[in-house]
Length: 148
Image (cartoon, rainbow, N blue to C red; front, side, top):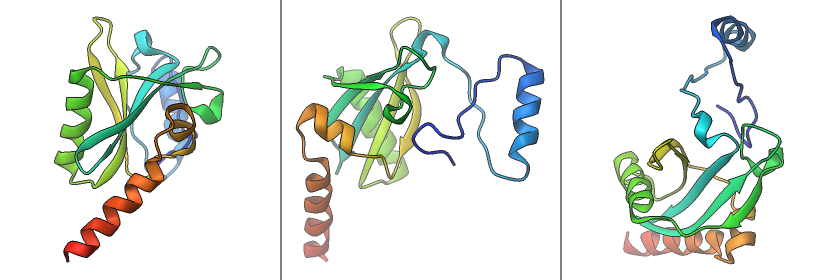
């Protein structure tokens, strides 16, 4: 539905929400709770073949979205065991061979699922972690093809 933080809106009340929904016209959209404690910050964990291979924290001081395309700054991050478990579990449930799993942080420090991206961009996470995410995906796809 959205990409790079585009088509992501923050409604402060029902009136703003109604206006946003009307602007969407017949296009599909998703509404989700705003986690104010995590505003401008998220964690992306890239999972390939059920294994977390790279993670970054993204922060924006000027926007509620942490996306790098909107000015968020990426930095390498070491996920907690709970964060890795959520990321892997989500990929297993969805049956994805690879995905970028975005997590927010709740007020008590608990990880909260924001979204799972089947086509998550790789440049920022590769740049800040040094992990060749694209190479890992290619290796995974080729290995599965060899098994056929």
